[in-house]
Image (tube, rainbow, N blue to C red; front, side):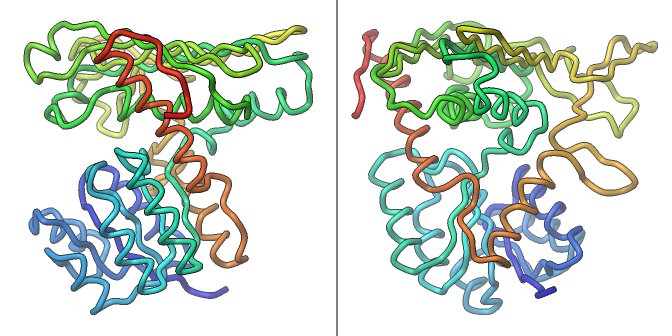
Length: 344
């Protein structure tokens, strides 16, 4: 099988996760990392090989990889994507695709003009339970789609990790918004959102929690509860070190002839010891036999397979654009306290 060389631009948390997953695949070679925090790039290549760069342009010139994974802060996706596309690199871009519709369109156009594959990192499309909901809807086993309710609330430590650079709607709410649009591919008519303010607001200046109502053109509704205001103790344990924490997560879809319910609180494993109760992540990027598995692995495997087989990925740039438009409408609704109609 053809070997694929790849590099990462942005060596933070998700850049590290995706680098590890990619480097553990048998047909890929990790060649380098670029980050304005050069120490982070160095730490990544010390673990997985390749060369470290402070400037992504230098990485592209020196390494010329087949694939670039862009995991920079959300507002900094456009320039590295354009530079990589011009060099003929296929692009995996972490969600959200961009922070403005103009940047999203520029990213999509740059990849189309260069004839390179673009995939957006919506990991839930590769989690088994979420995809089983999709297949049940497609088979019309619950009749006509009426509504979806999604919950995604993480501990306050996630907000602190991001240090106020982005809101919970734009950072974690995008996952469930994308799922709703995937489950019910009908144009969105309007979005109304309400934010709630507590400890995160006082400490970091981003709201703690938000509720969104999404109305589709056919009258169906999506409701989303999203935030990062769970107490630190939710995932504060020290042992087992292999048990990574997550949050309070669920999805419920109702149709005219049935309903589908996913509950990831806990996912499917819990424990209790002298430190207290523990609810580990067993679905997204757990470690098994020394390697990362779960949806993160399936997601990146799919992307590399699309390159090998020259086919369109399950999550396209247009999908990223659609979810971004709903996100921006929700943020506008919060700031102006009104229903926002689409398209923007």
